[in-house]
Length: 296
Ligand SMILES: Nc1ncnc2c1ncn2[C@@H]1O[C@H](COP(=O)(O)OP(=O)(O)OP(=O)(O)O)[C@@H](O)[C@H]1O
Image (cartoon, rainbow, N blue to C red; front, side, top):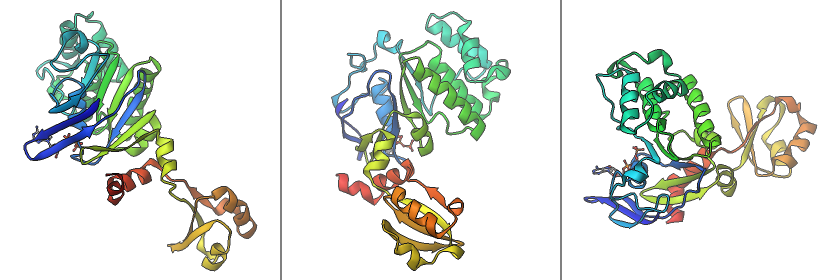
């Protein structure tokens, strides 16, 4: 997509967004509430028309909607619609029929998202998390090449979330392209090949999770029991930029942990040291908070 802009009245939801998602890529879209993530997914998925800019999906414009293109795309959004009075299996069978698929694919799709035991429960009797998984099953049913998932793990408990990760990784292994929005940064770090961070309708960063973390050069924190080391002794170590007492610990900040750790080992028992490496969360907070101003 190139220069894509979308306004809702006074609100500019997307402000000249350009990005390319590669085939077979697991592409994450992160951003705070109201950043424009859903709008982006809806425009690329052909559910909404952009005001300006161009979007190309498999060489075609997703708008106006094209049935040949729709068959290659699977979408799960926060507003996924169900046939509420049907059971989970009947709902998926109906969707299968719409795509001209074998009804048996409904059973396979239920298995895939670990919902087999709820196959005969009515859709409107499912829990929020189960409905979320059914929405994912609906998006996968027709074996699309490109899958949009809009916060699919939002209502899931930790176990169900991990189970869905396995499903998502298997989709990637099959060579499908996945565009994925999430608020969970550890999830983006664990799953995504590349991540676009959007804030205020603009792309403020786009890279692999590892490069995003690295490019910010956020310090590594080394936590040492405060009883064993004084602040002055810590600051005297080459490579330590800051040392602050945090409860029972002394927290050392450094960008060169490999240099500091051996020297620290001469002063304290190295097994008592906890190493906290920077995460995507650090990168994200910098970019979407005050840090985003630097990118405008
Ligand atoms: N149909 C609409 N009509 C008017 N304004 C809208 C509409 N949809 C979204 N907006 C506004 O556009 C902006 C971007 O919304 P969008 O839903 O794309 O954000 P998001 O990043 O998906 O947010 P969230 O993380 O909360 O789901 C917000 O300010 C929102 O209020």
